[in-house]
Image: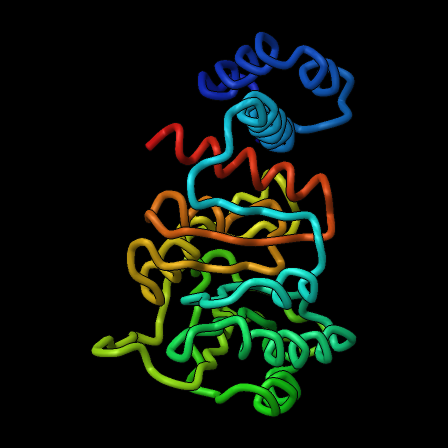
Length: 261
């Protein structure tokens, strides 16, 4: 009965007509009973996002943006004088050694007062701190607050968690600057990738940790949320990922971000 009532709702009818006009193939799946309207609307948004990036791929590379298809090791062995490394590596137990290697390479790549800010899961914080402290000084943990209606579920611990840790490392505090240790994130849409980070959260994080024209690095770039927010905030960005398709999306996103400023 509730489903039937929904189908007579003016908004439902309007959404259905829009999908029929803009995405006939998705509309056909609705008519065939393969997808419900909420899922179809998300499919439409994903399709539109991909179309925007396809068009943006033809734009030139923005100034101050250097995004490469390579490994973290290859990138961080070459770049120097970074103001900040802001990144979110994989979270699993098997990724813990990767954090240690990141710390080792970061110490050489950063300026003396540079910041290494690493988002990680809560399950392996003690192990991550241990392997990273072997190479670079621990400073603090920032709380990256998730939307109240969108907690992360840690199934093996039977926990709903409303924040993620941002581990902060560095040899010297930035001269004359104080940092707050809470950053709020709005909902991440994840239209381009299941691991896509919140643009609002990373905007606030980058703004908190750096100043305009700073050189920021993300060696686990993904589809480029860090790059997009650096462009919007007038920071320079160098980043990499081993996934060619992800790097292409990151480049297109950065170009599009500069165009709409």
